[in-house]
Length: 230
Image (cartoon, rainbow, N blue to C red; front, side, top):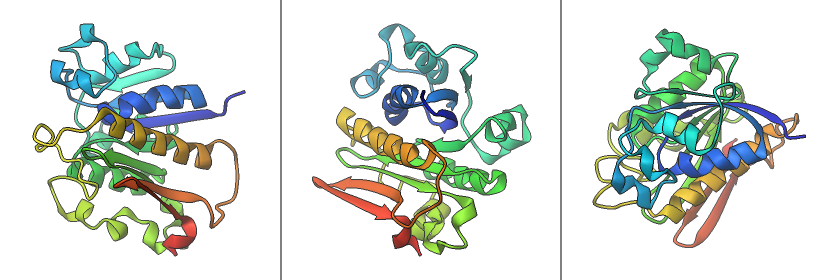
């Protein structure tokens, strides 16, 4: 029997297009997708969508492409910011959420995702990539006392201060000049899926060897554990 997981995913683009089917295979998944983008033809070379969904909001299109029914999937066709927690969308960050996943390609969304994780006391996974490198890391607000270097603003201060691209260099405005490879999206999604499996597939204590980050850079794979965040 697959373990149950309730996930709220911010950003329904390239990374999520590979992550969602993986999570759906790994878990008994209940998911909400949050994204204000509509699918464009140019997205199809690096994102898993159907051509007949061009012009449609990405969230509902992605749920349809993965045959996730209404009972198991929802979407909010709007860009995420912290004000969303003042609307009915807060439901997807409360009891109906085990983990927030941010796969958006800009700092403001990531920053607000960190604030949301702290406010709602929910674990947060951030996954992103640039042209050929990929990264995913997890942050758990309840562990920041024991592991002070776990907080994203400590490890990646650009997230807190910048309104542009990522410390992982997955920038929104520059996307067309340095497009992401489909394989980089797929690897980032695999990293996120593996992190989530390690943390949510079964109940366990937070041992020091638990991975908190995977990063591939120039053909090298780097792993960070909880112990490294003390």
